[in-house]
Image (tube, rainbow over all chains, first blue to last red; front, side, top):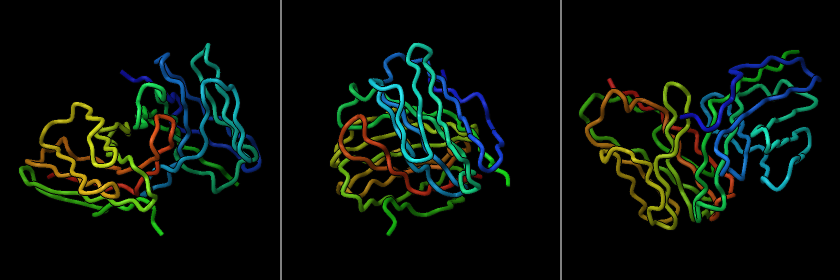
Length: 116
Length: 113
C-alpha cells in the first residue's frame, strides 16, 4: 500500500529551465511534507518542507506547492542547474500524531537529469 | 565533520551469519532512526529511538535488534541473516517532534549471499 507516490521515475530538463517534480499521497492524516535530494552512494539530504496549513513554501531556487484537496504536492526548481541532477524523494508524516519521532513515509523517487 | 556516520559502508556476508551496523550522530539530536531501502527503492522506517528509548518499531522481524547505548549512538544488530535482508540501511537523526526533518547517514549496503 503506497501512501506516497511519485509516478515519474525520471525527468530530464535543460539547464536554466524549470524542473517540476510531482508527488501524490493518499493518507489524509498527513500534515507535513518534505522533499529530499539524494546523490549516488550518499544518504538523502533534506531540501525543503511544507506544513499542511500552507500551500506554498519557497527557499531560493526551490519552491514546494501543496494542494490538499487534490492530495498533491510539487517541487519547482528554477533555474535548474547541472548540480541539481539527483534523485528527489517526496516524504510525508502525520506530524501531530507521532510525538517525539518524525515517522516519514517516502515515495520511490524521481531521478532528475539537468542537461547542458 | 560528518553529522551522521554509519559503518561499514559495504557489508557482504553469507546467509545465517550475524552482523552489526554502527551509527553515530554529532548533531545533538535526541531521536535516531533506522530506515531500509529495498531493491524497489522504497525507503521504509524500521525503528526509532528517543534518548535511548524505543518509540517506533515497524513490525520488523525480531532477528533485527537495535541498541542505543546513548542518545548519540544507535546500532543495528541482525541475527541469522537471510537473502531478503539484502538492502541499503540508512541511519538518521532528528530533533524531537513529528515535524523535524531527518538527517541521514550515507547508508550501509548489505549483501547476503
